[in-house]
Length: 365
Image (cartoon, rainbow, N blue to C red; front, top):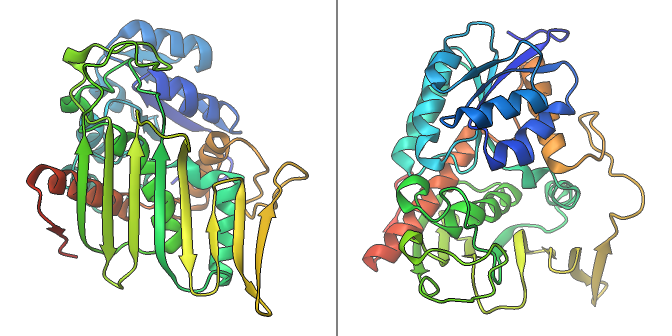
């Protein structure tokens, strides 16, 4: 049990881009937190992370199991490639640590279920890094949905489309390590956001398609530079159609490279019986009032958003880290429940399976 005034000691496993770009900067803004251990198979990365974020006596490891053996560490952040999320998280939970694992939860539902079961078995907290829930527009829209402004949401679109932004660093293009391309990388954010808004985690069936059209193109205008065709083993675009048990439907569209001008990443469109919402041009709410159409655009540029947790208008990754630690101190469930992330993984897996087989994939809930 982490007390209200205890210093929370955190170990970072995986000191690459997502750890440096999100997790460690977010934790650095969190009061009462110390990053006391860093692990990476490239030890130089762990050493740099210690210099940038660690306590003077922080430990550096190449083997994550040595980090987990330290009984003074309370929390572990898993920031490794997707394939290792499951076994590192399970080992950390079994070692008595609370775990924040970067998205996606795992490369498939079997591995995600192992994580979910380990959290239940050990009684330790597990959450997944879907920080887009912490954006001001997401929080405001969620409050409106909960108030019933949109009524029953029966159609939604989850969108994560880039025109040319294929990540060429790390192992993003490696299907074995990552489990897929844009669908599991950025589509997962859009789907999580949409399911959370709908509060609907019971999928009935899905169909999906994936495309690998750009691998052999040269001078493709990619913002990260040219890719090596031999290493580009994941899809460049993926699309899915999901039907929920209550009849609601979700269109999911994701791409790293698409000849499409309307680039939007990790956004949702919601259609309900009383109103609709989209994130196409800021956050817009639409409906009919007294027989007339209305559209309301919410302005987040002026003034702050009143957040309930006593945490102000920080960047999403800062709010994510601070709210995560606050939940641990208060003994409450985190905002992103592992059961919710497990559902996201099941749907992504279903879309990949449907694309591979050409068949409808049914879910057994």
